[in-house]
Length: 89
Image 1: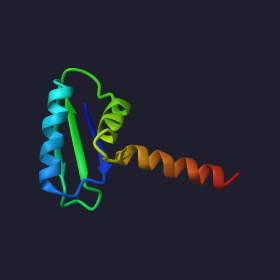
Image 2: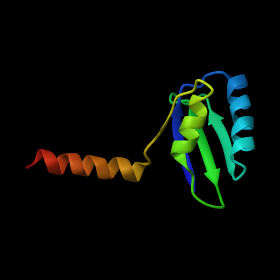
Image 3: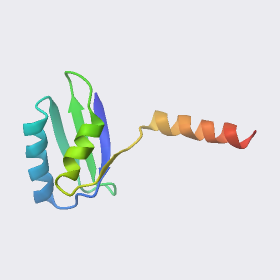
């Protein structure tokens, strides 16, 4: 499973420290940042189960970081279809 988060992390040193802390706290997760992306992406991969996004978001808050789940393309398309359907009623 893969989950992608938008964050407020902008410094490489901060990202590196957070990755170490994530790996220590969530042994089954592999984390990496893409700070060049406009959303300062945090990507979490878990091959052995599901990702507990709420726990991770709260964990990052403890270090003064903001993170929110970025919806994937399928979720965005479903949302757009729902909005169009509601608008046509």
